[in-house]
Length: 438
Image (tube, rainbow, N blue to C red; front, side, top):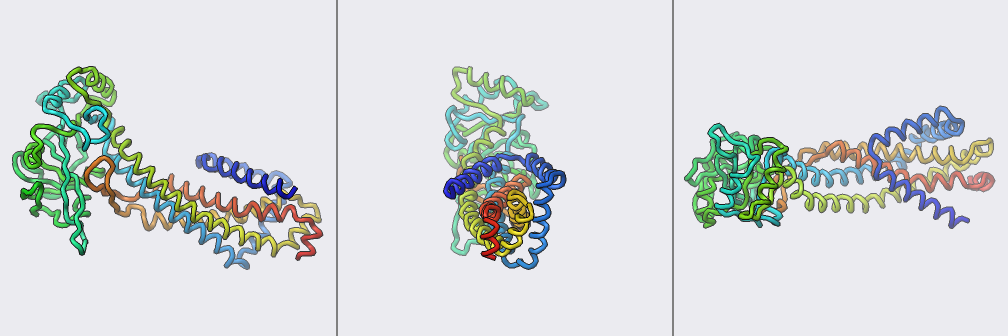
């Protein structure tokens, strides 16, 4: 019987945890409302409230042992949220780089710009497709672009390390296609000259990226004439005239991709179908929003797996700490619990009371850990190699409300597991045994 009982508790734990993982915050609020109503409207709930109030009133006498639960869970939540904030910030930066009213065209089956190539004839055909917005002169707003890699000195490196940055060759249409790109220092590059503008992320990552500085690209000197901000992945790039950059890297008239401004978001269907139906082209078009969202998927998944793995390992330690603390608390209150059961209190109110105490301690730990993670890491600057590019992506960690809720869910899950088995023991221990042990 004891084995079956323990097996039942394990299955119950797995079932509750599985449901809890899928529960949105609205469901949690509804569950809390139902629980509070039960505690105030039903006899067993009132009994649980009475037992819980006695246990909570003695927390000051068990401050050290209670702090073990709070601090342990705060550490788990803080580390978990900080690591997941990396994935969130990375994904947000790439998502901000796209929109529904712009499209990117690449060679068919190409997963990214680096592996794509378009000829000059391809670009001319793309410009004639329906659905493209036109400027005041009636010209299609299309930016045929190429990407290249540049090794630049890493800022603050004492060993003169170099990092890879992505250089994008663009024309005037690039600034129309991406209206969020704003020059904040200096000016734009002049077509036909070896001039370059750099993103804010490049300035943060690499040495010497100031207006007037000279750097080498393809063994040729280039002058930095401006710094731009965009609030997205473009800030991690250097922009130059496409024709000059193509000559520097001996790319000829070929380009890696073409970014177009659509007449409206609905025009993507006609635009894409026209390109796929053209026998002279072997290209594929998608909105830039969909393109950059897909680019972020793999790295985001890797970062989330790392965060959840580390959090799970730490959570195991926090669970054992909670179990140890609550078993000790139950043992210290054995006489009290036995007396309550002897005068008519059922097992359910005792179980709920013990678990409520653990849950509140876990909630406190979760809120503290989430607040510390937000305070220290929200907006924290980081960089990593960008998927599908040849350079690093600079981004800010983002501790979103969704991540804070995820951290609180982890905290309450740890509290549930840490309180369930001590609570079950308290409720099932025979009254005579409990009085004798006390």
